[in-house]
Figure 1 (cartoon, rainbow, N blue to C red):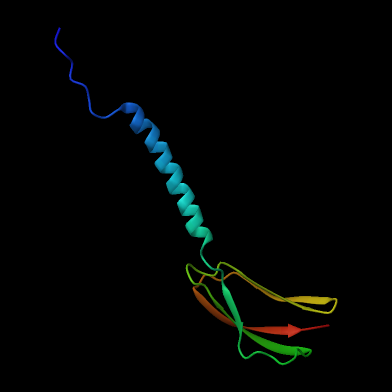
Figure 2: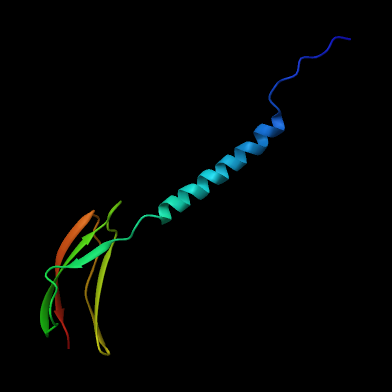
Length: 102
């Protein structure tokens, strides 16, 4: 009886390493997505006080991707107002928010 040539690759090694590689790739992708800093919001110019009808200039900047939606809520004491709720899809967005406190 002649010896049979065997493959150098072990099938169990391939079947075991492929799911491990997929799990490591999925976990590293999720970790990379969570490491992205959030959207930065700046008031230009910063108001010294809020009056009854103070306009606020808000500048939003996303470091990666775009700003999916915008909601501005102003709280003063026990009164709150939502002067703006908008859906914008841009990397950098600037807008003027009219604030009217009752």
